[in-house]
Length: 578
Image 1 (tube, rainbow, N blue to C red):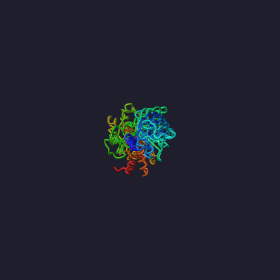
Image 2 (image 1 turned 45 degrees about the horizontal axis):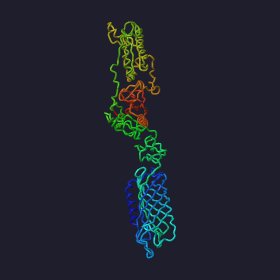
Image 3 (image 1 turned 135 degrees about the vertical axis):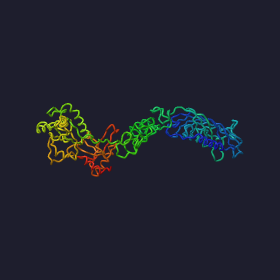
Image 4 (image 1 turned 180 degrees about the horizontal axis):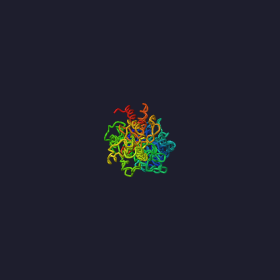
């Protein structure tokens, strides 16, 4: 019994030493589908009617087949046969006065089959349990080979033996292994020692060690649990989870298997890099499919949209903003600094004189070619200041009849008027009249004086004195004094292409006026600001400006429209305090 005790302890310790890592249930059991041919040798330990239990030799050969499985436990079916001896001495422990035999040695052989359960503690250490049944033959004699004394009576040497066994199998390679085992064998007989004495049947134990040759089995080269003949990815790395085809699982379908995927939850159809993460072209930490600014320079801090941070919200990112604290709504240049307001300065020259002798044919109203360069200068001023109005005065000397001179002076003023109109100046900005010789600027008694008096004067007039001018001159198309000034806000559409800034962010296209309250890089913010002012009762709108000097598109929030500069400035004062 002590021997059996020591064998069980040895098996337990050995299993603990080699079972340092659990067997992975995702791969085939090491014995799956294999055949095992084993040769074992060892000893028997007999418990019989003799006083001193003895040890003797035992050999066994077996052939076993293991069912294929992915489990850590595999079932095996074994056919086996054995040859050995049982021995003891010290004479029988009871009724020894009738028995002269001092020892015995029984020849045994058996063959049968059984079932084993093989547990894969690791891929190389496999403890097992075995239960079997076999035909058992025995022939008891003395150790010298003589018949027992007294002789045994008639009995049958053919029995059925039940065997229980435990052990450990060690896989040394794909085809070879080492086994150790210990077991108990029970035969329903008390004659293994040749005598039937007492009330208990004889029994014996065995301890074996041997070598095993393995062949056949399931082929799974990459150990992923899919047989090679069904495996579409036969070179999968060890311990990688695979699908039913033996290929590494790719949960997010980005063509990067999960075991190599640093971003296993990438949305479908998103381009990824070699690590399975969404492509981030500018390396700002925001994937391209979420990045609204894909060309951000390296090292620049970005917001959750992938765009460079812009603390003052002026459309120029902080990393290149030279004026980082610009007030919200201020138009800036490409460096983030406020743009200098372009204001058309007051007209420096308010009166232009065309000499009658040089610019008109003598005694006629037709303009000569030499007059046009001077008229072009006047046209430029009129176009640069589209909100201005002008009067055209014709004058003569006192030579000849007054009535004829009056008619000539009117015709010459009208020629200049028609020249301006034909070049795009609106008629409403012009007044024309002739004054004959009523307003000389030099002495009519001299030739030089008379030459100076023959002239056409083009004079700037202001809103304040338009009424006076109308009362003192006769327009080409006379306007009734009781007629109201036209309301362009109802009849005209503002033309931003022709607008001019006349100061304090007030703009005009020559007819209508509006003023600017804010400017933004995004339409959403501009619309929000416009809505705020509309809620306060102002007529606001958004103008899109895309000019080279603005370094991109701006959305300007404006209030309008008005018929005069004074009206625009008055309304502006309600919003903006200068």
